[in-house]
Length: 149
Image (tube, rainbow, N blue to C red; front, side):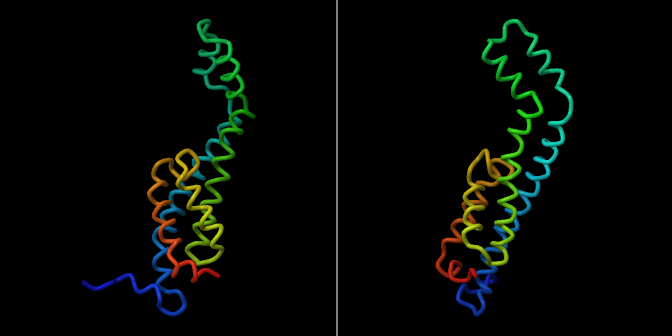
C-alpha cells in the first residue's frame, strides 16, 4: 500500500504541512460556523425580549432567585455576556487553525486545539472535540513541532 501522505522528514516541512492540513481545515470550518452563529446571537441580543421569557417572568410559581437570573439574562447586556465569549474563543480557534495550516505560531495553534476540545467553548460544541484531539496529536509530533516557524 502506498503512503499518499508523504513523509514527515521531507525537505521544507512538506510532510508536516500535509499532516496539519486536514485538521486545520476542519477546525477552520467548524469555528467559522460557530463564529457566524455567534454573530447571529449578538445581533439577536439587540432585539426585543422573547415573549416566552416574558411569560415565564410573569409566572407566580417561579422562585425569586430564578426570576432574577432570568430577568438579568434576558436583558441586552445579559445576552451579550453569554454570546461574546463564545464568539471570541471561536475567532481564536479560527485564526489558530489558519496559523497551524501555514505552519506558523505553534503556541496559537496549540491554544486553538485546546479550546476546540473544551465542549462548551469550542467550535460546534461536541464536533470540535475529535478534531481538536486530532490536531493536538498531530501538533505534538516532533517532526511537526520542528516545522513551525
